[in-house]
Length: 382
Image (cartoon, rainbow, N blue to C red; front, side, top):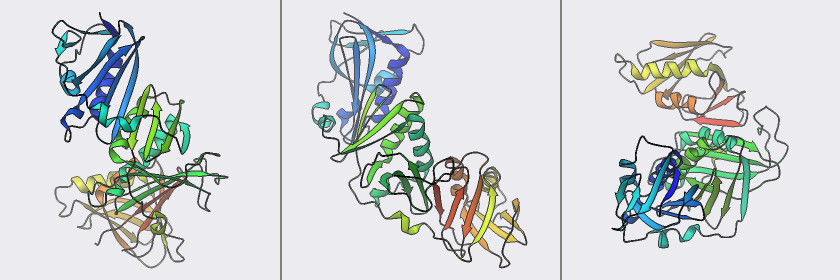
């Protein structure tokens, strides 16, 4: 009695199971559960906060559910062979995958850890193309916090609301109706993005944890770009069906701060610099890699006449941007890492607009290439 499944598809499913499974907590959650019935093979993985169920088409006989160590399977998975991998249980009770045997685990963690994945009432939902979910989450996620103390910042918050005076779509048109707002911050920088979604509204704040964001990005990258994907929220959970994978995660149980209060309003005497993203990122990278620089983690933006200079702490210039400036000079410092990370949020070749106040005021960064994005960066003392 043998079950045959695509070798490539099974490998992708096992890699996802390894990403989802818990390697630090409950030891049984490091296993995945494999079963086949009626021409469909199902692979489940979980930890205490999230789970994934992948379904693949298969041929042959049914396979009773078996729990195996997913990392053990991946370590011995055949890197070469035919297009199909065969699975069956031998006379000793071991699960054979591609000719390698794995003894089934005696404890089934899914009876307890997957109870939250059972169907429940969906309170609200939002639907977009897979490519749009991918673009939006990719732009926001670099600003997620990693601090254990402020756990409510360890993720991306999604909320809906009415359009504001600075709310635009990607073509630069003012948002005509309800929009989704994505935001993430680590206390040193903030990325907030408004996206028009028509009549879909999700209500309230929903904080998707950072580990779930990484897994969602993994799923969205391999999904068809034009496929519609719906995120469903309800009872502290988020659910999504992406390219044959049902993914469920607990949401962060906490109140996200009102990040709109830290986005600088229009300043009457604000200084403005227009800089090329690629040149700014390259200058920050060169400063960080310079062996002669005493402070490789800091870049200085210096106003000189009608030019903005990007310098290191020693005063060496790495980039210059001609611009109309005000008479009062300004010297402001930034972490080189944060300047380099701007390339993860704004499109390559973008022209950035930096609105600054004093050397210690937060800096608002926007770009015509992404009108819905508002990026706030805290300077460091020079």
